[in-house]
Length: 67
Length: 183
Image (cartoon, helix red, strand yellow):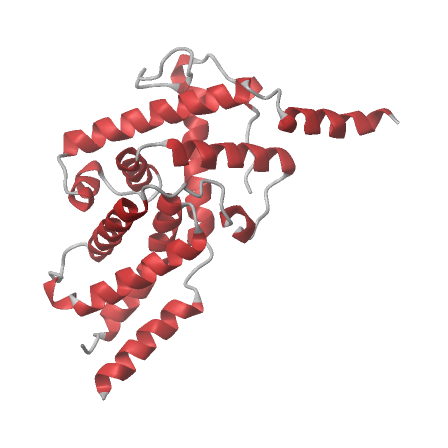
């Protein structure tokens, strides 16, 4: 798991929020953190690859249809 | 149905991101895998309606999304499994502090309205363009953009509240753990 900055180190650097869409009290830091956590969560599952049950499912369906 | 080998490979190649999408939507691995299985069954039965040359992944995501939404309507009254068994399945167990943060994030994500959550995941994690996400969700591009914006704002609010609201057991636990250094 990648290192994450603690919330306390929130930066006031405006370049962290280039679109300026963030509410000032909800800085670019927390938005950046949200983006990273979302991708980490997602990528962790992607990295698990294809579970056997889905390969077996396709094999079974193909066998059924060959009959 | 005789599946073309290249189509078969392409369908299987889409499975990891379909699972990630399904888990992000439902917060529950078992439900997510059932959803992916149902998606593959529907896809193969309807494979003739897929237009070759178009985006197979987006087509599969559309099927999964619609299945989830119809199931979601049925289950709306059930309590959502925001924490669920998901974290236990992770290969890389995060550190304690990151795990608390991660749980907070999952809980906040589960609090979003379904339409905002799916838009945020499609654009922010699956890597679809706003146009593709709009196609998958069957709505206008502008609608997707505003849902993604509202989702980000709401998540940021929820997570700010959670980080300010750290005087509960998590903070106490951390204080106890930090206190062990004194001995």
